[in-house]
Length: 179
Image (cartoon, rainbow, N blue to C red):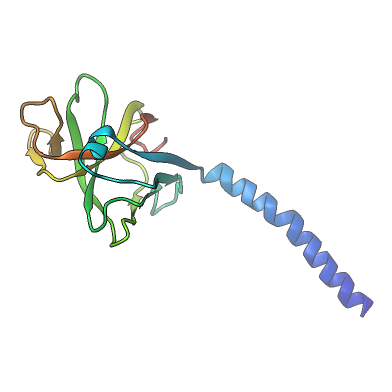
């Protein structure tokens, strides 16, 4: 009986010492960051709501997933689709939101989530400032010279009826998914 208790005690002690070290090492390799998603003034004016929202980024750096992003909206308008777009707040991209056919749809309670898996590598390591915006309504325009779909934003003369309902803060990103 004493031998069994000693084995159990040793197993518990090893588990208590090893598991936290493993979690700490995993956090060093797989950094997780969270950005708040906020309701914009244009969103408020258009009748949009948002109780909470956040974007969680997990740097998996694996052979299949280089980056995992989880977008979460809570208390937004029910049964609404928002287009997830990238905005680069500098003069060259002024008034253009890049749309990559990523949408988040809310349920009857106004809750929605979208999981994006980004493959490893690719892109450039030049850091740029950007923010993510959530657009409701409007139709994107295809720009063949760039090979992308965009929404034109006011005061651009081609801006449509879209509303930027939510946005993240501006953050720095490298397109090798290292932000």
